[in-house]
Length: 396
Ligand SMILES: C[S@@+](CC[C@H](N)C(=O)[O-])C[C@H]1O[C@@H](n2cnc3c(N)ncnc32)[C@H](O)[C@@H]1O
Image (cartoon, rainbow, N blue to C red; front, side, top):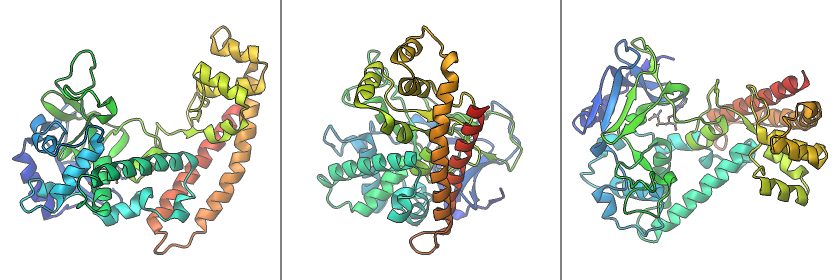
């Protein structure tokens, strides 16, 4: 994909970043047609070269004095604290992060790509897994907005939503360096925080786009760095991996999907949970096998949890018990399990055909942009392909 010259606000930001503890080596930001900014190799890069390092003092974490000075109530999430900090900075004269803020995506760009901003008509057409993630995202945002609104009523919902999404799409996992041994992931003096709260904003690092095969960003007490995972030729895009995410997750949390994603899978909960009796639900809960059933486009196609639940649904309970207790690998029952799942998938495939047709027929305009329709259609076609592969593999 051709990269374009990013423009002068990016040149200004790079100068700002370099004078603020960011060491850049052989890479540069570039503008892409379909995914905003990204990072390209400015020269040939060798595997193992450290291409960027961001000093720990340049990260924005809640341990920072300016953020601590805002004296948030203890229950305020880290996400909310960071968002509130950036909201308060946003319109301030002499805001110290201005060159960084100037290269972030605009509110309008978010409105196009993030399902949170899509029309209800489109949200209702999201795959089940994406809809579940969207509901959770909406409720986290609401919780955070209300907690900040109570102490900073001047921050509008619009601005808060924007900076909250900036934090959501641009934070890195940050293990606070001064962690006590007993709770290796909890920042000292903040025992109420959980590992999920260990986030940092990281200038320049947030230019990298995601690939399931990208470089792995590493953090240590000195800061954050990215090392080349392979050789890159000058001009090639360099990606990092944001984690092992499915395309439903990437769509809802980041506003894009990958054409090829080795971490993709399809949750089957919406097909399976409704089949369970209340006794079966209880058994599964007691055994720790309730929910999180997945179908994967790679082998094994069915995850262990799915193998377990389908045994409970289709076999005498002693066969299920033998399987989950490990006394029987369950190979003899595999045909019956596969047959049951195929039945569910064939029914689901018919529903998918109808949804694909409906999405394909959507008229584009104010409520449905071409980009939104395209992303949704591509995702449904991927779901259809996973289901088809599942049926083929289980039938063979
Ligand atoms: C950390 S930022 C990366 C820089 C961003 N592209 C920008 O313009 O500033 C994450 C956002 O980049 C975009 N993105 C990241 N990886 C992508 C990919 N492989 N394809 C399309 N968009 C991607 C998504 O909009 C995502 O929310």
